[in-house]
Length: 316
Image (cartoon, rainbow, N blue to C red; front, side):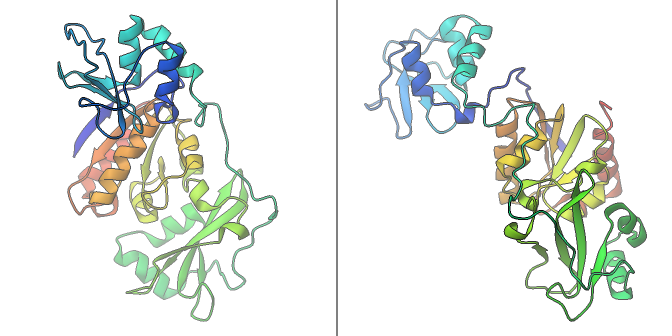
């Protein structure tokens, strides 16, 4: 597997949330918002990088992402490297950007919004702890040890006649309290493979939490899209329930010293991994695992799975 290491910034800045125009106004740095050197979604400033000699605002500063690039000398960077070059000081640049950061992500936050109208979550009435034969066969066909997963994730099982018919119920706990649950269809061609408890019926919805957190014992964590991706890697891995990660999920991830992102190798997975890595990189070490096209962690061979498992033990 080809791995890409993202650089850790030792500060609490999430540059995605900074209005760079406010920073420039605060520092009295002039900029242009239109003209021949300015593209849509960018502003232009004089390039401060050594050796450029720019006098016509050739440094493009993107307004939606913290990217800067000079059309004169070709140098590129981000808001931090740009302001550091302007001020001649990396530490001063950090102080300025921290001042303008709205702190949506903080390393010390535990923030997950709880539903004030729901104080208790119950599993479906017909959910049983005894594993039916068809549920066992479904897990075995996917290459899992049914009893191992059952013990690890406290599976419950629903039969044919139910709102959750022919599904494996996966309870989700926070501090030993049931906050919501998700479910997995065992049918060959289900209309919906994964179905979650509704947000209004959950204390914390699954998209505001990370399944597998209670099995992460070290300072590093692997983030994957789906339940079976997580189950294939095992303890130390968490599931985001899809490519789109919520701010609450990101807050949970940045509490770890290192986050390894192993999303699927399709286009949505690649794009989402890059965006998530970009969002987290100001707070923690981020490494993105680039899987082969069409592959997901659940479909990797034993050697690659072993490598992923070892990665969450590096800094235990």
